[in-house]
Length: 193
Image 1 (cartoon, one colour):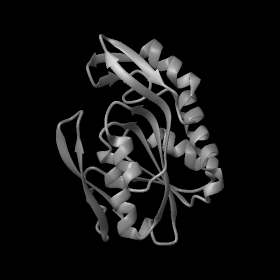
Image 2: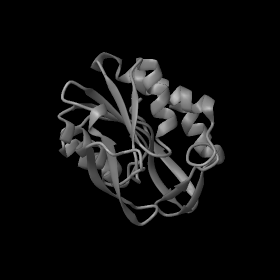
Image 3: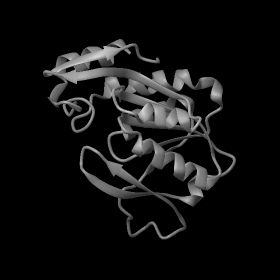
């Protein structure tokens, strides 16, 4: 997606090999116009999949997932990283390791919001090692829902996340695919959408 690639080139900051900081428009401060365009693009790509729910993980996946859900006219569910006091119903849970934060979190979704009749589009901000997407896939599988695909904002193609998901039989669509982060520069490969 040209707008996203342009924005990464303009405002992205390579912190080291493997780490791209996009906090001025994706992960801390959010550009709502760009989020809407990205969410709408993912909704267009999966328009024929008869999606019934869009699922993401808090926090940076929420904005594009919400716009995709709005465009598809379906609910958006986000997996929580911490259980709230009001979540007293039966939960679907999975463990997710974060490369960036170097921690493992237990994510959860209330079972009442996801079931075997659902066709799910999973959306996340980054795909690196694939652990967040894998955790969301596991939650959906626990509910018996069918995963129609995973939509990614920024993929680090030099890491093995895409292959992990493909090996699981999951369709992956990335709006920006990064070939490398070397010497403070971002190199891209062709995006899926």
